[in-house]
Length: 237
Ligand code: ATP
Image 1 (spheres, rainbow, N blue to C red):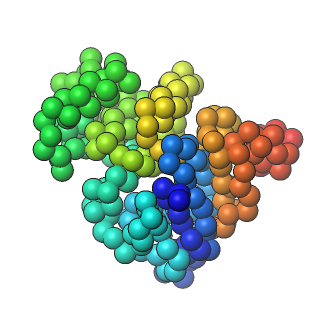
Image 2: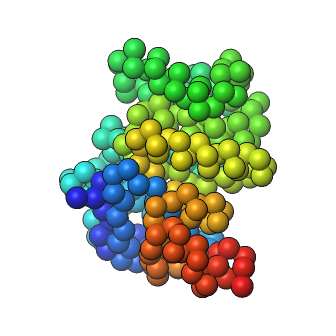
């Protein structure tokens, strides 16, 4: 049984059909990536999983249960956490406070302390900056806070929307290395990325979305080698 299964999911924004019959699965332990052009429906797919938009039709199952109608906050409690595109760091809160927001539903103090350790191990920069206000961090550091905050909720499924967006090349490498490390430590990852090269080379499997539909799916390696994918998404003819 897949950890996550979308079956024939359609989503509408008024008259616009943003997703049409999207079906995809994520197995426990995998990194799965969604690639596609601007407006293809990648963010909308993530929102359908996290519960931030209602489905027009179809279903979302998590861990074998139908969560299609479950509220977003209750999905977080089940272990689905999103680190949103655009980051969403609270500017007036310190780095530490921002991270604490990720686990506000938890009471297990000892485990929370261990998770702070883990996040600071993954992102030593955040430990150095623990008392600095979120709003004064660089873009790359804010991205680290957003991912760190999602990890503080101990997700079973981490949804990452454009984690490399706006980052300098050396940060991009680092963020992808950290995503691989988070996955190795046991978190399943669904990743949306413009940087298809990096995403596919890190992912077990990928899905190509075009104007709201899945047009192709395969292993990360096969998609990387696919001539049509190369031409459309990897900037290679
Ligand atoms: P990008 O890579 O540019 O972020 P995306 O693949 O994530 O794109 P989505 O954000 O999922 O694409 O958008 C899919 C389609 O739905 C687009 O045509 C977009 O304009 C439309 N859309 C998204 N959000 C809304 C909204 N709130 N109201 C109306 N249309 C929307």
